[in-house]
Image (cartoon, rainbow, N blue to C red):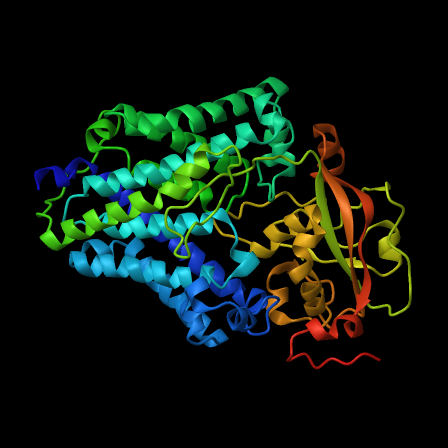
Length: 510
């Protein structure tokens, strides 16, 4: 079928698939490095406990057949190795069927992780990676031209990502409609990056321009994806530029890079060649019949499954980041329908003192300590602060760039500050692991103030954080200022949380 192939999109396909492979690699590495403390056999939300109460049909995963930490690690490193090979271009060197099977393995392995990941894997970009990776398998490899139908399915996915995000904003927080949301967002977003302080201090009119431009790119530009070239390529380019702006202004795991990958698949060679020198198109063979049949079946499947996300887009009660099936195919997306006006942070502290002491100060007191460990009365009482890798903590520590890597504990600590009930299933289990210096948990942290022996007690305080002004930054070197709001969780001992501590813990209380 002559209409089936679109050879002018070979370069867009190549870049799109390589980026998706890179994100798979990142996802598997993040899982391998973090799973033991989060969902391992002795984790805060153990997989075996989850699979015991949730049947296979409700959460398809290889771990329903068997789970051990060793098996989980094997799947992570197998996925990482395969993703690295596909990133290096191996998929273009093997037969088409082998390449498609490899993409299928990546999807199945990551699906197995996501479907038992519970709260730690409840982010929209998990479903986005699975859906994009599934479509990537049907884009073919360097031996055949990209199929037109799959290119349209990728555009439909990109449309849902951008248009869904735009609609949820218009239907959500009023500040999106009066163009003021970015007066707060750069400071209150889950994990600010190294440039977020500077974005926050842009003049007010520029913040309004940011919001207006965002609305244009998410609500108007996506329609142009379905127009003829070069209009579609221009629309995709605007999306890429907007996503790069978001990459610079914060840390959103791989959401932005995955959106960029999808957008680049829209750009055809003639449009790109008008502004860039491009390599010569490689020789592309004819599409085998079995491949054409699979693509047609995929198109029918996506068309059927699109009913639910399309209905969601049209609904006044639109939800974001919703999977309508257990395979995470054809999902609803969206982000930041509401914006926090203030930034709250949970600060976790420990002490070697077993005696009873009060909290670290009166609510409303502003702490200007910048040592990153303890502050004010807290230091004199022997309370010392745990440092996280990504989330704000020490006041002089400039926010870090961690995306596209995903620090899951840091992200959920942001949600914990907003909603203690959201954190209830795992937060006290986290504290229990600090009370025994659990190695897997401590590897998730940047700083452990008790390297030689576990603390006798731990507690959590709720602070309001705000970016310092340019003058305060010059005078103190602090990027943040914080004010104590209240005690988040009263001091607890291992005796209080013994039922939540890892089974291998052997420490005894005096």
